[in-house]
Image (tube, rainbow, N blue to C red; front, side, top):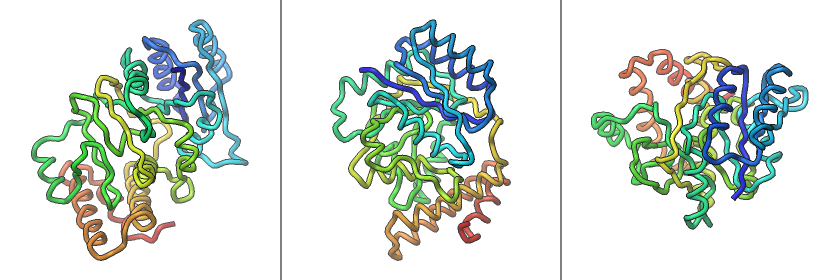
Length: 299
């Protein structure tokens, strides 16, 4: 199977260069790589990268967004890249990933060997994500933040994941920036939603829940591994990011989840645990940002 890669990027030229380098080192190369730029990558950079990919017989395309016509944001960039991609299987990668050598091949092998008739995406695991301790798992169960699936979105809009899985599993959530998608299914779902005027925190949660409601899920292949370097460029402050997350979390619950008393109590209880976890781990800016985001009317 042939496949495309889409990389949304914003003000992270060095990180993007390293990500592209890891793609060129892959045991299995894509048919094309599409960069969707929310910033101003230099012409010299693009020319040099195109030449590197040309030598590997792979096409590198560059699309700079016109912000008079479209807003900034990951979801819009993903949708643009998805529409431009030639192949049915499209990887969407964060620009600050560094892929292990067999990342692409391991995921494509799952597409080729498994029954994927109800699969919208297949992704890998992030090596430097923290692993959940027994205490954290207990905490999550108390606040109903876990699921019977190791990768899922609960009925009140909270995601659960486990980068420590040992075999390929099926679930209803994946790291959206380290995942491949079936283009036809993504387009039928309407692509990725732009939440709250471009603030796209939790776009992967909203998309996964929408896919789940349509009977579509994911495979997660632990042999497809990547580092996520969390580059600082293009990021908002921790406080602002947490505020946006809470605003979008409320929107997801209010528009996509049942609103009976049981589910409202469940949402409040899970939200309490989610915020409390920030304070217990010393993330005070995030904790306060989430509290304010929950109590301020969505804007």
